[in-house]
Image (cartoon, rainbow, N blue to C red; front, top):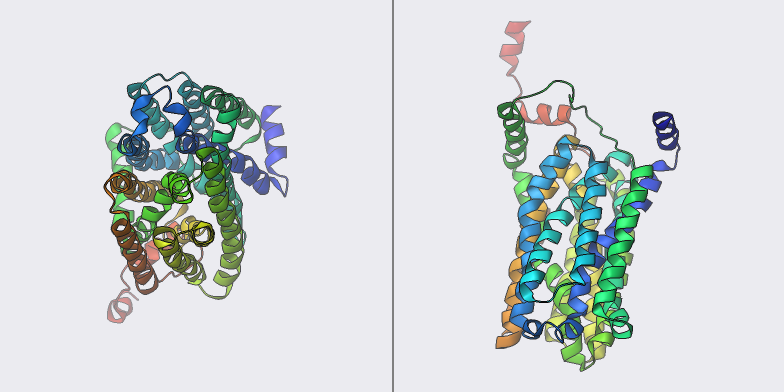
Length: 440
């Protein structure tokens, strides 16, 4: 009965889009739960006084990023080997439990531990979810499908800004408790409606030794890191992550201090501005990319470059601008550009890496990108206290410019959707004609 019901559900024509819809809400919770801390700082520091200094707050945000980054490659490897549905369900349930527990924290040590556990649990979600969506959307809808999923991420950032508003009307403890319960309940719904779909087979009947498992893992890692395109993808993913994570974690504070407004107003204003612009970016970028790649194989790369190009003047406005208009204009432009860039990362990876290694590949991309985010989050805390913020923005602009150059010059895709067979053919040297004649 269960198998029959499952088959009937997945056979529906619109089920791939139902998967996107279900995971879009998970993505919303994924980012909402982690971002609420950034806007509820003024309310939490009344009870946890160590949060008053920007340096301590930067360290607290960074511990999540470092743990998340270090766990991402392992989570990707596991997602390529195991059932992604259950990884998603368990990941959501655990991080929602952590969110619930944040409301009971009484000191910095407890916050550090909880943020670290959240980093571990949330790391398992994105590689599994994106590779699952890519397997359900293999044709001309891939970028748009990932765009709709990514829109959940930006909506989560936007609603995360309202954490301060809700905390102002109730308490920061109640805010954490409420969203923790929502996530735990939703994870139970996913058990009933979410289904796995791998486009390759894994022999789960024949038992393999630990040595064989490590050998298979090593083969996948060798495939990834022997590919120059993957190294470029790692860099162009991590370089924009410097300003990407800087704006996510510090824009509410920059809005509050630059515009002289309370966090209950600055939090929603900053996160809504950035997130809504990013939402437009991911949908427009996904639509444009799917159509451009149908005409030119580098269409996704060109679309991504347009997005990155928009972030450069945006950083100038945010870092050096003054007044409401310039700062909001910078946030809107950055959100639009970063959304266009962000939605094309997995689709571009799919042009160079077969399905069975994509979660692993994205896990390492997360490691590179979020490590950059952890560094910049901590550095911005120091820069804000010491007064050298402008130089940090110069470095971020330079990193984005370098990523654009490498992306345009090195990445030369041969297909829209890389497969094991195509990769083997690419990596196999063509036999000289004289040898072919002798064999004949």
